[in-house]
Length: 521
Image (cartoon, rainbow, N blue to C red; front, side, top):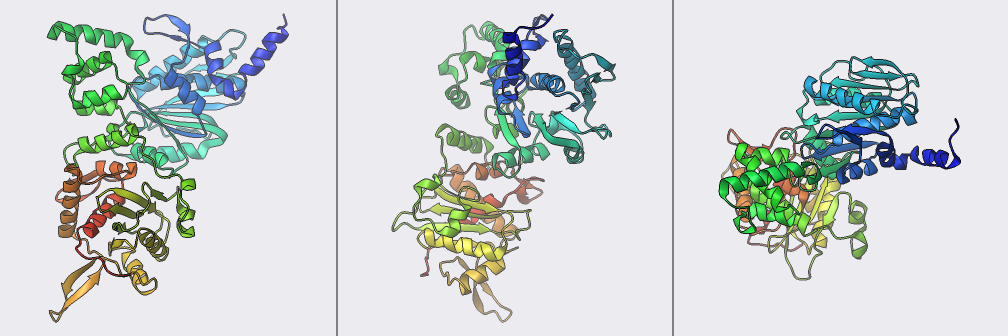
């Protein structure tokens, strides 16, 4: 029997890529928490995720938000809408892999008979269809993750817990076809490749689109748990949790949209584990998920609060169209490597710290600008600009900010940058320090010489100003680096795989701010 013209038009509409959500909700069923098979109606978080998908995506999330389940549905749709598709679902361990394959079979078998392709194979954690498509579920660490296939849809689950993630990701990306979709998804697990990829995507340093889903907004899947927690709390304490009972962090969560039922559940969950564990598995902000305790140099609670303030107060750098007098050199970099939160004021003094690299794509060259009140007003970072050109940029920023007092770290690309600033650009307003030559004659040196002793001194000055609230930080990037800046066996620096260039540049700007003298340029 044929189909009506109306139904044919509806099917044509459903087959369009912009209608993925409607396709899933029309054809796929899932088993709900009561064990009943029901139409797969997506949550708001799942809809946001599906609507925003691009070629490469990275997802930091709270636990149990159903993103793996919707990824399975997307793989099934890919195989039906586009015959001869190859989809790969990778889990971090065998137990999870088995669970994913069970959900895949359940969703696939729920398809209407007229839509579901016949299968050639439906075992060994792989479904092969007569239309040439297949979906394979494997465990991370499997030597044959891609098995020579050209992949059209890939979902990598709990990537932060993988062993040898660089090796496997490289293998998978080489197998991905044109127009394919790659999803890296995980809860946090400390500072590792997943952490680096996520924050690089936020800073637009790689091609991934970042997503973050917190536990507060994802509460629709936990309503019954919240009700149970409220009952238990009341039975123990004789009353419900009230706003008067909340601590400072809970009050901030209330401002972020958490309900009293959610905060009750949070308290009960923390009582069984720890606050640090809750932050990792149920973060309210993306940076909170990666908080490192113990050997952190900066107070991570205060760093996290500063990041929350940036989000709540919607602090953003000045739009380029609102700046009329920016030098052409800085215009080229604005919004990419150079950012300003406050324009220079006539008569005000400014202080610049510069920590420079060789510009070979590894460490970053960073410039931080503070005003006389200790507020961060501008930031520049780039890891591909050579030292000779960094001298031009420092000169331009320094002169733009009222011939600011500049402190340049002498190591790496600093020596050549200092020389060019002094002798080619005639920039004289630079930090100097005294030393003695081999004849015990006092000499003045331009720049700052960082060693284990001086590094400890300038970082401790930074810690004091930040923790006493004597400075204002407007850069998320700087605060993120402060979170992973640790002391290990007496040495200070970023944890392995992370950067500390903005931290050091800010410490150098503070050195300049503490100087008594400004020199004429």
